[in-house]
Amino acid sequence: MAVNTDKNSYTIIFAVAMVLVVGSLLAFTASSLRPNIDENKRMEKQQNILYAMGVNENEGTGDIAFIGTDKVAEQFSKYITKQLVIENGVAKEDDKAYLIDIKKEQAKGKNGGTRRLPLFVGEKDGKTFYIAPIRGKGLWDAIWGYVALDKDMVVQGTFFDHAGETPGLGANIKQRYFMDDFYGERLLTEAGVFKGISVAKGNNDPKNEIKDDYEVDALAGATITGDGVSAMIKKDLKLYLPYFKTLK
Amino acid sequence: MGLLSKKDAKLITDPLADNNPITIQVLGICSALAITAELKASLVMGIAVLFVLSVGNVVISLMRNIIPSKIRIIVQLIVVAALVIVVDQVLKAFAYELSKTLSVFVGLIITNCIIMGRFEAFALANGPWKSFLDGIGNALGYAVILIIVGFFRELLGSGTLFGIPVLGDPIEKTGVYAIGYENNGFMLMPPMALIVVGLIIWVQRSRNKALIED
Image 1 (tube, rainbow over the protein chains, first blue to last red):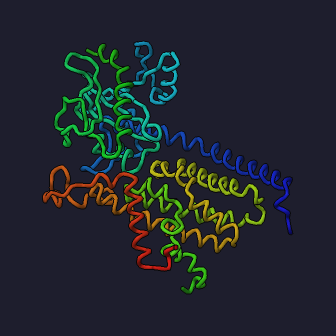
Image 2: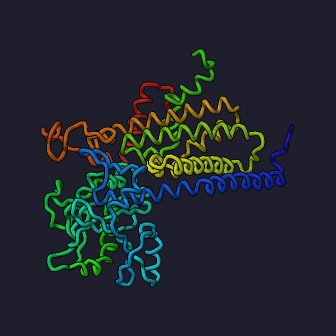
Image 3: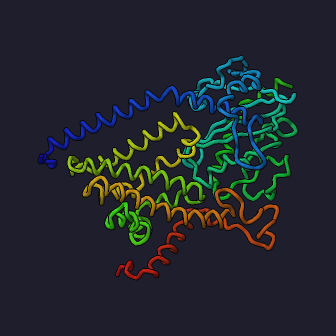
């Protein structure tokens, strides 16, 4: 069977056939796996939110460990007492608030629309946590996270994740030692003005014992990712300031 | 080697040393720089490339007689991209944790020149079984270099291996840090990967003079 593979007509037919076969293969995989993938993403969000408020399976000083996927839904409804959506300064309860797409809301805000701000209220050991999602840009791709605050906007826990930061460098924002540094840092000055937290190089406090310097120690070789973290904390959490003022 | 003939066995052993994809063929340098700051990432990338290259080589080899030569590069690109995306989707659905670890590598695998290089240089001209072995061999040769580079960069750059501190605590000043040793942050920068690869090339060529080109 000698096919003349150099002929133009053959080349075109081959290209069309290849596109059809590969295209339908990809479309079929994507649509048949969609429900599973969505379910996984939903559970991941719940795990992330719970992680930020300290509901996790961390042991010692090792890696981050989420609540298992088998019990995350149950734990989520146990610890998260209220899910709020803040729109134009008005907070409404909405038990689907955790599914709000922050990327879309940010785009809406940029185009002059009103952004819906999800906020999760959690209770653990008699303490109240206010957990807010944040999202920004790293070096290569998106970075995002959840920050748990108390009513004075002092950080009680964080979770950061990224889509494609460099392994060993920027990707280390997902390491516990980086996230744990934020614990106890303040977002507001004494006078109640929003200041944010900077991921700072050379802040001479590598053990992060000073909690009122509005700085955490940066990661080596990850300047742009670190700046991205500072920026998303400053930008996104500031939007919640009016709500936190009403808590006083 | 009872299982493989001498010629077949050479397909696997050659790329490990004297025809190494990174140090001799100079393919796949970009990913060798990008992800070797950590040993774990190097290992994961090695395994991922092993899978994609061996399967991709077989697919291309099976199609070698029907691929029009004018568009063969695009066809190769489509095969590898489709393969990687399907695997990524399946992992996202059934092994979500694993897929999160691998997500960074997806783009790097598709654009890895070793894969295109082996499709073009080997799979287009050889049968499926030979191509499969060639894929395994080259991916292993790639992984070996990645692991060597990752080992030195993580050890000297962060003082850890697989994320576990092996030299003591740099902040508490224990272990070797107690006598004044410091981590070399330079090792974490991509250019240092190139220098480590250069040192490997130097060692390799000084041991085997036949590899030195004029």
